[in-house]
Image (cartoon, rainbow, N blue to C red; front, top):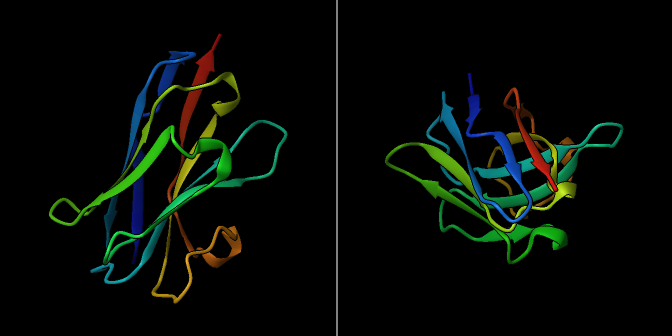
Length: 125
């Protein structure tokens, strides 16, 4: 059974950085697509970034491009999201998600059957 556990959330000020981690277990994750989504209060869950477990190709939502970096560590079975230059509008619960092998990196949450419990990120001005 695939399990995903996020850590690293917190409260910061605008312009600060945070690093989220997702510990993945229950599979080898060969060629899985691992992703981060977020959900702000009163809004729908939205895609943030994705990475292919093998090869490391990445895909970002436009608003975080250049500020956020997704990466994976095979040895530790973790996926990380380095968030720099945080903005108030980045405030949300951040979720790690996993999708079994697929030909296309996708930002459609319905394509990801496995989810973590989420970690809160709060950015104040």
